[in-house]
Length: 161
Image 1 (tube, helix red, strand yellow):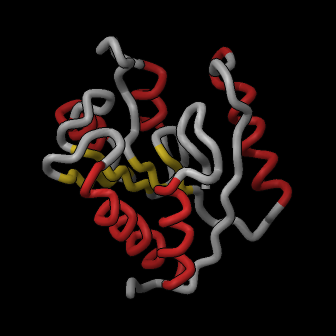
Image 2 (image 1 turned 45 degrees about the vertical axis):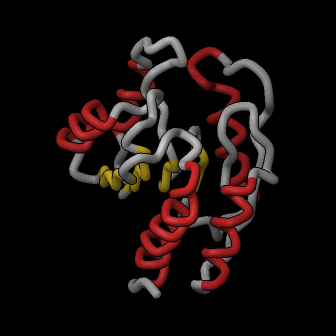
Image 3 (image 1 turned 30 degrees about the vertical axis):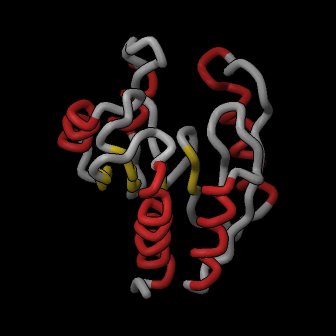
């Protein structure tokens, strides 16, 4: 599981997701990417994520906070100033593996209308919107974690809890 930009492996959301997955019989490991400003084209971050997979061929899915993998918890397609992040939009359009985005309906970094449009263009992209939640999910964090854990468990084991 990968933390959000600038975050560490001990983010409460990732710790909770690791526990939730464990309760469903899905092993999980938290891994950190280099902190600091993103590299051009995210080349460094992609290389680090690939190194995680190369180091453990048993990995079947990624989960991430904000910037992450197969389950994305609060995916940003806007900057804090509201500018479109076209490269991030393209990533979602081009995904070839089943991917769940759990998004807060009030997340200014991931406008639901934009994510719905992107999900409509990519049949492998599934969107779950949590009403009233922001980028950090607030009181809806447990629901975000449970949704992500159920979705991953269903794909890893063929059923949810």
